[in-house]
Amino acid sequence: METADAKSVYRLRGQTIEIVFADVKEHRGLRRFSDHGLSRVRAEFALDVLLHKLLVVQRSLSQR
Image (cartoon, rainbow, N blue to C red):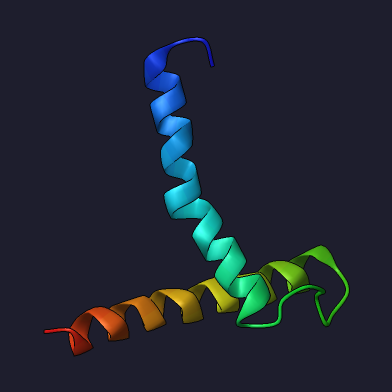
């Protein structure tokens, strides 16, 4: 991260990606997975991400 462009892109990560992880951990209770095995953990995480995206869509529709 020596260039100014790289630093600005990395700064945006905190505003976009990290918010999703914080929301899933704090508001959805995903600190530990309830199942074992990589495929089941991936499925559980995918459902949590889908829920987050649906809530974002719902929030944007309700603001109209």
